Length: 125
Image 1 (cartoon, rainbow, N blue to C red):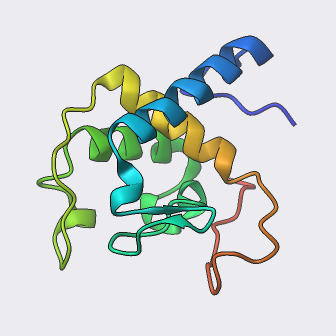
Image 2 (cartoon, rainbow, N blue to C red; image 1 turned 180 degrees about the vertical axis):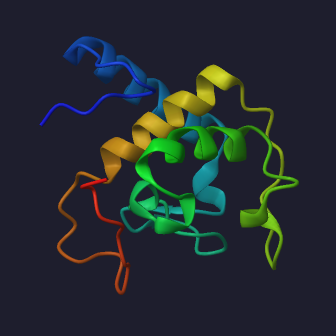
């Protein structure tokens, strides 16, 4: 099933380049120093393996932009108000959009029930 990113249906090459850029951004910003992806990384901050499906981000129409805004500047966001706090990492708009594309792609991987007890949102909306 084709799935648009930021309101645009991308070619396979465009989507692959954007997802790759997101992966490289996650690596360059050392996200796994705090987060986990597919069981790798740290357990200080939330697991990102299925972050795209987390109902906390709202409905499908708002999720991409909410995630971009949070990644660029988490300092005043509700997601960052309690307990452990994500720092502002100087992520550009282009990098944030690429990270969201990478997280959306990650959510399509069949992880055989990992992370345990994760309650995904419906993808029908």
